[in-house]
Length: 238
Image (cartoon, rainbow, N blue to C red; front, side, top):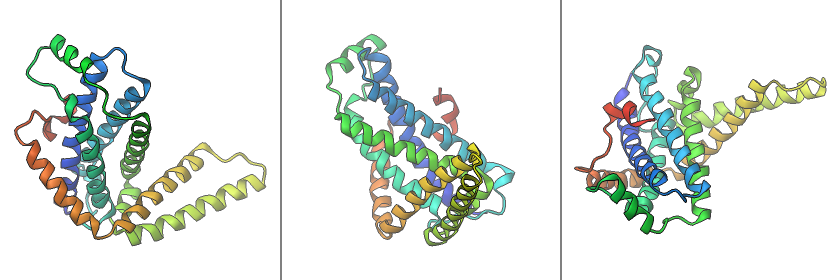
């Protein structure tokens, strides 16, 4: 199995997501008046970090043997695109990244800094993080992970077929006046969300290479900062 492509794609996203989480954690802990939108943003980045950690664990397990990931696979492409989105969020929150002071001083400084996101931006980021987390949660099921190891066109074909199957099952059950099982409804929702992601990635096409180059520049700028390393990620997630 080619673990290297997936590891490289996910590693940068994990580090960046953990850095955003750390900044938000400091803000939420230090600013008593932090809005519900800010707390939701913190919660969603925490969920994303959790599923990324689980994906790394899954990748290292025996269950992933026989699944090959390369840069054209949907999961690697998704990680690249998601990292670019998390990078935008990081840049907006960077001014809240206070270091070199004790807890009380940090709180005092943060409280004087205006929250950098408008409510609409915050809500949009929350929705994006939810979609990102759902994709990686979907990938943790072995059969789904096999699907996402393929190219966008292959994944679209397979998932569209599976989605039609779920819709047919739901319609048949409703026609029989039988409630649709929660598991079937949940699976249909997950497939719908992932189909949206796959469609977006297919439309981006060659832009992914440009995104990757931009991410490389950001990672260079993060070198030397106190970013939680991948191998210690379990201690960074509360």
